[in-house]
Amino acid sequence: MDLLTLDFMLRALLAAFVTGLAAPAVGTYLVQRRQALMGDGIGHVAVTGVAVGLLTHTSPVLAAVVVAVLAALLIEAMRDRGTSGDVALALLFYGGIAGGVLITGLAGQSAATLNRFLFGSITTVDSGDLGVVVGLAVVVIVVALGLSARLFAVAQDPDFARVAGLRVGAWNVLVSVLAAVTVTVAMRTVGLLLVSALMVVPVATAQQVTRTFRATLLGSMALGTVASVAGLVFSAYVDAAPGASIVVLALAGFCLAWPVGAALRRRQRMLSPFGSEEEMVLAVEEPHTVVPEDHGHEHGPDCGHRAVQHGDHVDYVHDGHRHAPHGGHYDEH
Image (cartoon, rainbow, N blue to C red; front, side, top):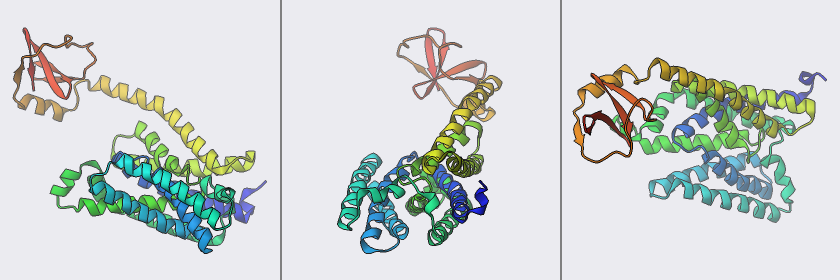
């Protein structure tokens, strides 16, 4: 079967391609902010948006975009007022899925109607949906790449970004809105319940073999694209669910990359067992004090703590401090 002769398959491949680029691009910032599950929470809320679209006989995709963006803004508002991020996500998880099923029933539709949005149905993407998906994906990719320096600074060290003059709150809102838009972009590709996987797994895979943020960003976008397109083609030949095939293929990529990354990290430790030259210089320049307490064990090459060269001796990183055995006591730096 020649897949490229089928119009629905061409639309599906294009949707998979742009989704594979956009989802990991935003996921990189979420992983950096330790909010890997945020896409999952927004995905659950987007179910309510789909149901609203069914109830009002409007586009479920556009309705999901509006509701998901509102949910993202609500998350940031709750975080600003001190609510735990986990609690905010939990509220979205339960409220979103319950609201979606309830409103779908009010619209006279069965819960089974939601399945193509929950688990993806990329081969049913029509021309209208494709235009929305491609348009939103292009916006997400342009913003994620074009503003990468500022977004990375805010995600990596908010205090430094604030001192540098960046409006951290506004940039955090932008990342959350990008995540909401990405969820709805990926809704027809992998489904709302699996979208978080496409945002996170390619990033985790790229991190195994990359050492810089930009390399991770670009690498995860490439991996996401390969997983999306290859998973779709695979599902067409074996008659499997496209969304599940894409996610399983992305996870297989991580399983292959993990031992490679472990080997690279072990080699790096052997080449530089005492850390970078900058760390060594700082270690020499910093003062030290005597640690009066007794250690439960003796520091040494086999104690399991990281070793840092300090002048003519070696410090061992222990509970956030660097300790060095010195006669009958330990020095702390």
